Amino acid sequence: MSPLQEEAQTSSGLFSYTYLKHAFSWKQIYHGLLDLVFPPTCLRCGRVDTSWCDACLDELGQLPISQIGGDLDAITGTVGTGWHTDLLQHAVQALKYNNVQLLALPLASRLDHVISQQPWTIDMIIPVPLHSTRLQNRGYNQAKLIAEALSAQTGIPTVDALHRERNTPSQVGLNRNERLANVEGAFVATVPSNTKSALLIDDVRTTGATLVACATALKNAGIPSVYAATITVAEY
Image (cartoon, rainbow, N blue to C red; front, side, top):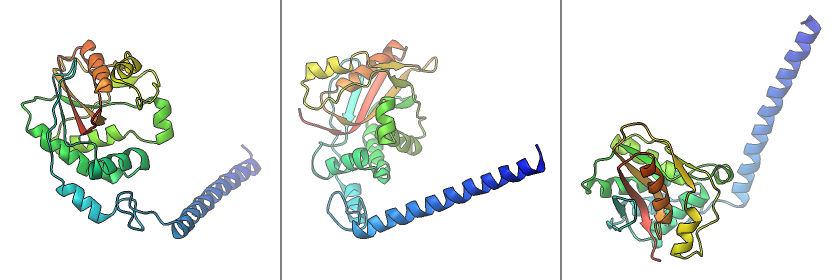
């Protein structure tokens, strides 16, 4: 490469770096101005300047925990930490739809409490996966955030053992049979050999159709005992 070419390349690199640096700065300024004109408000109580305020965070931490069980095909045991209403519903939806990722930790603490009360032996924690298209659109999987926070609290490893092959339509508005048909065969599992048990994690359990489909895939992959835990249980 000639000295002239090297200088051109160096100049181009400096230009690109300088451009990106200024572009990033302007992006920060733009979002800062938006926050000044349209400040964020707490998604639960409406307090200004935060998406989830400290008062609501404290209230969430003190919210009583109800162990809500259930019988689901292919699942050895299942439990939720409360009904999908009021503060708990607001928290789950803020994490799921509004990117308030700080809520993963207190929600996982609720799971830690109820799971510690169960006579379960768990080798790994497995989050219910999103399809790659939905993951790209949302930018994160709320079930995985909760699973990783739970893993940090329990010391049980989180494993991405499930893959969602079909981008299934939303379950909202479907009856139980339609939900079961919608997710049937949608998941495939790859698990380490000699895995004896696994804990499925999701945010909400309604009919349990998604959990059943995931558990079926895990059992077909050779896991004898599959448990499931969700933050909330929605009445159906």
